[in-house]
Length: 115
Image 1 (cartoon, one colour):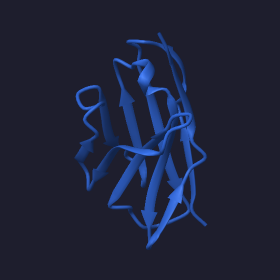
Image 2 (cartoon, helix red, strand yellow):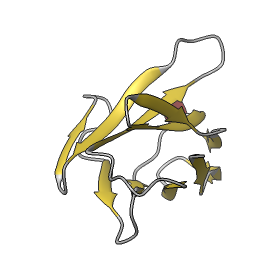
Image 3 (cartoon, helix red, strand yellow):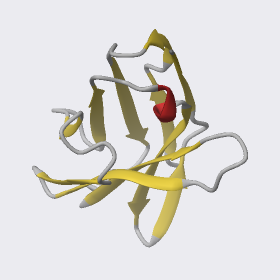
């Protein structure tokens, strides 16, 4: 049974930083791609970043240059470093890990950026 946990959210002022973690346990298989999504109140869930393989990261335009997605040493662990946060980054952030043909989602972690 795969379990996925996100952590690291919180309340920060504009210009601040947070580091989100996503850890998927319970599978011996490595997910080749891992995604971060976010959903703000009243808005659709949107893709923020993804990483393919060890270091093939891609970002939505609005976070490019501010967010960095990297793999951790542990299997199916990634970190999303978020710098220069803006109020528009306020959302619940979700990690999605596809393993064995099934998508696993975490419960999300709240990020709130005050102006």
